[in-house]
Image (cartoon, rainbow, N blue to C red):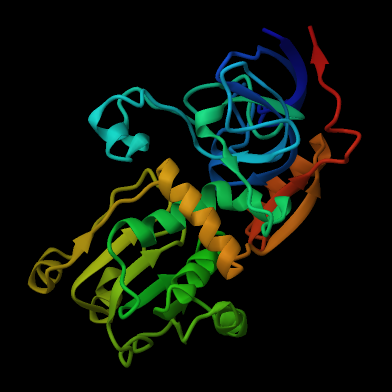
Length: 342
């Protein structure tokens, strides 16, 4: 088995990006990927103050494969997301819900010595995904987490093309949710705090657009059957209750440590349901990539250099709310090609 040393970018106690080196041995069931693009997710901001390699939206080119790998070869493009490994034997794994495996390995709980913010990574072949030819690597990177998260919420819980879909927020998740739902044939109703994004929302596929500010802002909205909450904060549920149809489903889609508080009686009387959702299983992730390739679902991205300075700049802009809508680190060809082998 070969061992490889490669460049990584880590967080630190001072919340500064630190360039370092990592060394890993390629196991029989693993793949060495030269990383060309890495998406920046809000989750990465939460761990910038820890001594770990950041990033979980990785895309690159296969350089080497273990002896037992038969689904990847050198030269293939590959990507990965939050889920690193699972037992593949428990009920959750066998029913296509690997993310809920009690032995799962996910970012940022494991493999903290490597990640997407690096020149290379060594990954389990079973948890890598082929990138379709119709999707560029820069577009593929945000799909590894943001796309997977949105598609899972839309596809896994029975959304039908005849239903009205509400999307709250037009950010990193919301702008992809608009596209996926519209391409599936749904009426897409977008809610935003300001009118500045109306033209963009409709260009992405929204059929209706409503500004949420103002006491009577949502009084005339025809109720929606599904509401995908992609904003960093939960909305005023008293205001949104009239927007929700009977038996509507609410999908909180962003990470928060706060409690979710909803009006009890109005929710009860309408039969509302709250559906928690995470990233896709491997099967749905592959389906998502195929759907995005076939229907031209593309993230809106801002590119940054794959350097300490580039990562710092992208993280600052994301923290300040200045990214529209996904930041992607792009490696120079010569910068990502070197990897020591022993």
